Structure formats: structure tokens, C-alpha cells
Length: 158
Image (cartoon, rainbow, N blue to C red; front, side, top):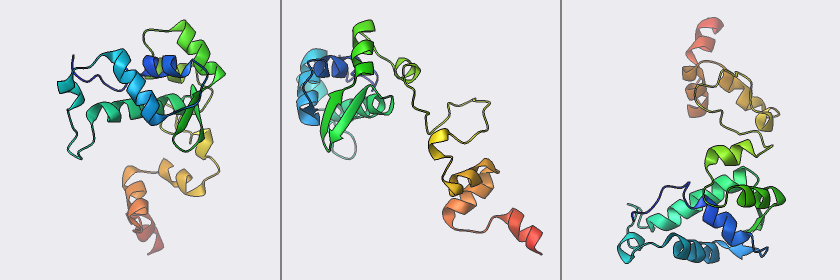
């Protein structure tokens, strides 16, 4: 079996945490590797940065589960399951996807899904005035990020 994508470890991460103990990322990684049953060859697969691919994928799973509110991080490097995470682990013990995780979340995503018709700034960012500037054209947003004056304001200033 090849190293799975980031969604495959989501259910095992929830199962590991369902025991009720807060665990470190290293402890979660070790238990998830046992659950997924990867070969030595799979475990030795590295990213160009030199990090193990499986560690990266489990890390992304933890990040997305945290973003969806299914797990919490009470302190740095320590992760625990939330009540919402427990209910998802019971309902979907074999497979949790980012779509299921998002659907169970009451948290407004910072990035709208592609093709979203909504032009509103996500609630989580609405108080940040510089984020409101992103509503304009793509080139204006890129210019703002690069610290340049957008062309539209140059032409209107003349």
C-alpha cells in the first residue's frame, strides 16, 4: 500500500483520540501508522524537504480536523478530540473526509470553496480591514500584497 493522501488518516486520528487522552503528535503518528499498516518502504518515502511523507500526511489530517473543530489543541504539540469529533468518529468510523469534517463544523472557513458564488468576506476575517481590499480585482490584491500601489489608484490619482 502506498502512503495515503491526507484524508485517509482522518478516521484513524479520530479513533486514536477517541480514547479520551490528549496525545502528542508523535504518539498519534505512531498509532496511526500501526492502524494503516504501511510497509517499511512506504515509511521510508520522503518529501523533497527530507521529512517523511507519512508524517506530512498525518500532520495535514490533524490540521484539517482541527480547522473543522473535530479536535482541539489545548497546548502546543498536544491534541485532543472534541465532542463533535467523537460524534463524527461514531457516525463514520471507517472514513472521514474533509467534506464531512467541514459539514459538521460551525466554523466559517477562511478560504471559500472554488466556484463559490459568495462574494462576502468570511466572518472570521470581516474585522480585518486589509482583507476587505481582497474583494477587488486579482491584480489589485496582488499589488497590495507586494506593497505596490495598484494601477487603478494610480490612474484615478492623476
